[in-house]
Amino acid sequence: MKQYLDLCRRIIDEGEWVANERTGKRCLTVINADLTYDVGAGEFPLVTTRKSYWKSAIAEMMGYLRGYDNAADFRALGTKTWDANANENQAWLNNPYRKGEDDMGLCYGAIGRNFPKPDGGSVDQLRQIVDDLTKGQDNRGEIFTFYHPGALHMACLRPCMYSHHFSLLGDTLYLNSTQRSCDVPLGLNFNMVQVYFLLAIMAQITGKKPGKAYHKIVNAHIYEDQLELMRDVQLKREPFAAPSFRINPAITSLEDLETWVTLDDFELEGYQFHEPIAYPFSV
Ligand SMILES: Nc1nc(=O)c2c([nH]1)NC[C@@H]1CN(c3ccc(C(=O)N[C@@H](CCC(=O)O)C(=O)O)cc3)CN21
Ligand SMILES: O=c1ccn([C@H]2C[C@H](O)[C@@H](COP(=O)(O)O)O2)c(=O)[nH]1
Image 1 (cartoon, protein in one colour):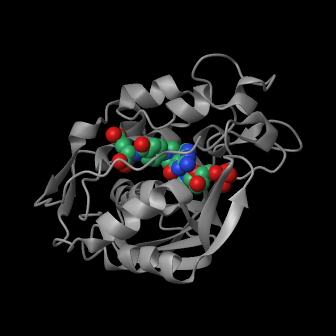
Image 2 (spheres, protein in one colour):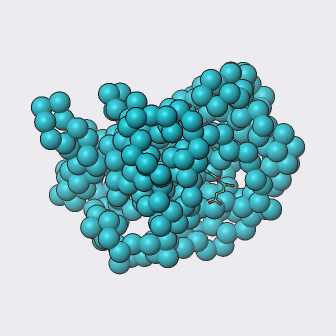
Image 3 (cartoon, protein in one colour):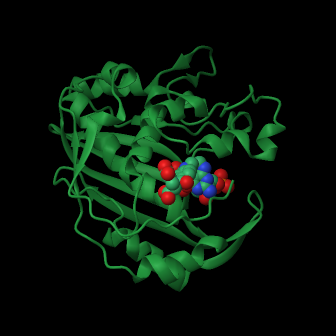
């Protein structure tokens, strides 16, 4: 939580205004931030200075792990976060590749689980990584990437957190996640939970101990219509102690995640938070 608040303050103190053509808004922006979550020590990185809808964040990551490409599938899992990008962005509505209501196109898990090969066919990166890690193997390239420059024109949005690289040292699993663009008031509140969750669940299904997750952000920004709420409301509040996060121990395989797991399989203990803040969302 301290890392999050420090980044928010740094953007306000040192950020530069950058005009963003896609949303038509200006963003107060800094370049490069490195956050670390000690998953082994159970340091769950949840925002406490406003109510965080953390289950929504987990549902998003579950949808990526399942390879979903449709906002309706994300809603069925328990999050509406893809509705606007799938259905309200004019450029995407006009895109000939859009397959209709709720289609998100070739992005995130839809690419990650089905990455097209130049010589034909596709690669299921996650299946290969899970198989390797389960055998105790780390080929120094256990990378789950959603970034395919040749497919960006076929998606409603380019992936923001676009690469998750797993590493083994003995029986401890590490994760380096990279994010190219970060909406700090809304997106990062979710992305921190997602990076922690991804390492915790991958360690659990591959039978490894979780170590640390390193989260690299390149462009970290606050939209102009979010600034006042961040500076004058959220940053005036005192954070509470972090809650602890629990995953149903019955989840032991990728197939479990793909089939029966729901948001009821994840719980928080001791989550204390301040009043919700409704930040404006830019489509
Ligand atoms: N501008 C922008 N920021 C993002 O963070 C973002 C995108 N676009 N597009 C793709 C996904 C969708 N994400 C989203 C979308 C909506 C919320 C949101 O409205 N959060 C509210 C309520 C969440 C709820 O009720 O479930 C929040 O207060 O956190 C958060 C992340 C993250 N990503
Ligand atoms: O997981 C996510 C997904 C999206 N975002 C934010 C970052 C940006 O504000 C927008 C994407 O806009 P681009 O013009 O494609 O950079 O969504 C996030 O923070 N986290």
